[in-house]
Length: 332
Image (cartoon, rainbow, N blue to C red):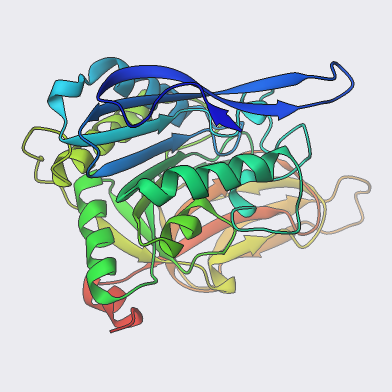
């Protein structure tokens, strides 16, 4: 893979990362993954990504807007922008790559998943994340679920590193920030491995909503200002933290059928509260299954497609946690 622009040169420019790929259409194909740089010096470098999953277009819109709005004279350092990171999936409206069926956000650091998705992830981790001090990865629920607009941080690292992620979440300014123990294959995990202060965001899903676009757009700008990369004073914003990731935070369907949600995203639910029903499809004799929440929490995300199979995601919750509680989980 190679980049068609010099990312180390000052100014503002756009080009492509060229992914060589041979398939039934042609023997010598190139897939052009869009990349842009806005630079006024090289330090600090911020990596901004979207389209990690190909059916999530909120971040694509936001990063295109940012590129149009920001001049190189307005920043101190460098922005590297990839608005359609998993471009083969983005242009086909698919969550995973149509080239190899791999999930981009599960393959970073992998050595046993050869294919074009792994090639993209390797290039991003080795050539771009390695140069970054900060990163933001914009997501949404895509076609299958909707999230309460929120940011995400990983809980790992020493206290100073975690505090930097907490501060970034306050600058982004979503109502909630979800704190999770990360998985090794995500872009966030790749950033963690290289000491990059990383913030991701879930900006709705199901349909493009103006309020979610505006949150992601202004939240990203304010994070850049908070890192002193954007030449402006950051607005005073804050967030509430939710701890998630335990098995009890996720509710999966026990049977196949039609799912009816009984709660809304952002709603507080109590332990053993009914949060949905699943209706079997084939006979009237099978009972309707009542779905209950295992413990008290706030609904972070919920399925927005009714048809489910056994084991499909229905609901995701988080429990309020203090900053002190987050720091207690970090290493000293």
